[in-house]
Amino acid sequence: MSPDPGRHPLRLRRRPVPWERQPPTWRAARPAVIAGALKRARARPSGNWYVIGARTDVRPGRPLAATVAGEEVVVWRDARGRLVGGPGVCPHLGAPLADSPVRCGTLVCHWHGLALDGTARAGWEPLPVHDDGVLVWVRLDAAGGEQPTEAPVVPARPALPTAVRSVWRGAGRCDPQDVVANRLDPWHGAWFHPYSFTDLTVVREPDGTDGGDRFVVDVSFRLGGRLVVPVRAEFTAPGPRTVVMRITEGEGTGSVVETHATPLGPDGLGRPRTAVVEAALATSDRPGFTLARRLSPLLRPAMRAAAGRLWRDDLAYAERRRHLRDRGRFPG
Image (cartoon, rainbow, N blue to C red; front, side, top):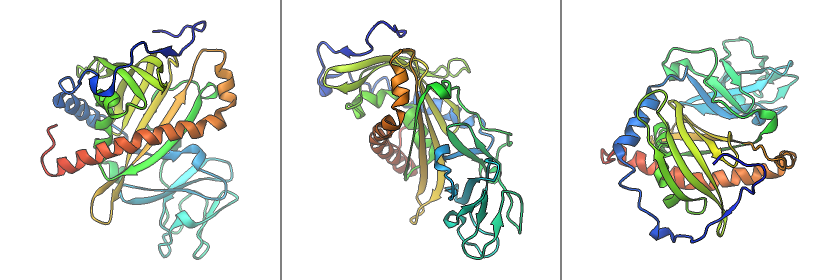
């Protein structure tokens, strides 16, 4: 299935199978396999790093604010353009720093004018932050409870200058493990998302070893009607809150979709809430992909819309899983 620059990437399905007549996958989607992959993922170290958003969300004049595990945090760029960040609560009288402006690289509290340049001041202490070129991370040692690391584990990606990138963010009433479990169930793809996927076959399941703890899937992306793009992809979980889908054969080999789950804290009724930050990095060896890179500002909204449509369903999946687990009724 390796890409052939001289061959058109699109295919016409000969005999489309109606949704209800596709092969059932419920026997193959064994709860123990999914639960085992999830358990191993949750045991991998994160270094206490959490994704909070896209690097493009850190804009001049305003900080990027988020709540992580119940803690308010803000990040911005200082006068030298470096990413800095820390608690989102002003130490003076508790103002929300998320509502404060950035002037010449300094965050100025809009209640009483406390100026923060990213260094410790007046009881405010900076937090470790990281810009990986696509996403922004913050390290919260108290929330993570692990041995901290200098930087997060960032999955291997296509070269950023040659990739078309987009980032989608949403939230649901679930735990990070429910988001990860959703991604570690590839069998639901063609049943739950027939508008996006068809002809899905899981050709390899995780065996629990470091080199083999991955799902390998043959699947066709639907473009409309009988028009599809067949690929082979693998799903891995390099950390407790991250799942990576990577195209290994077919059109777009090397393209990745990273799904990061960040706990936000409970809602007003005490239910857990989790943010999903999904980064898609598309690449191709085809000469025409140069045009796609030039048109990336026009393509990104469509890429985000596609991710949002999938996650509208998948967050319902994750929320349902959390609901049943809380009642001791989830079979996994």
